[in-house]
Length: 212
Image (cartoon, rainbow, N blue to C red; front, side, top):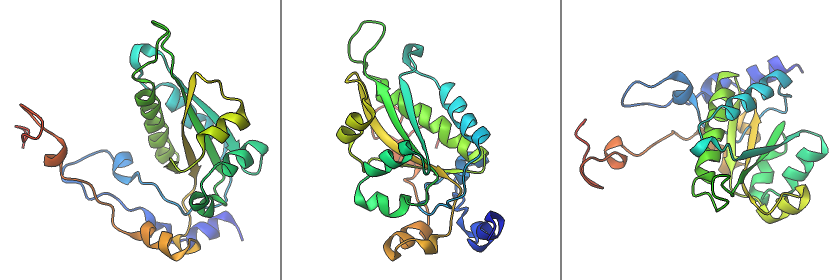
């Protein structure tokens, strides 16, 4: 069966899960979400390169660019090692994921040699750029905290001055019916967010912003 037929069979139109926003936002942000059902369909090399180019051009404190990425493409040895460090609950749905990425960040500031208070924030920004570029390329991303940073450090010989932060699954969205029942239910449930009034303040913390 071709990938085109598999994608059609997956009924992907029902998996767009466009956010119901209170105010207008761009389509990439509106349609970005983190699926667990992925097709085993390979991701084209030119698309992968664009993801990391977008990540490369993210903002960072002092332009230190602390992010580093380790790329595994199924079924290469790097993919196998990244897969091996995932928690069992994440391994269940990552078996078909074509691309796994281990994200790290340099903890040491080049300005004063001390621990940077911003390195995790900056890596997060870089991954956000990668995620939106993935949407632009017709791909989806799912970031995971359920993995062993310690084993990752050992397997990939990551220096101590680098924090091991997250694993990222990348690929084409698949059929939620391929997931176990509990994960399938989470896959199809409606996306929700806190109201803007709960996260945006003016004057002092907890005081409604004047723009509302």
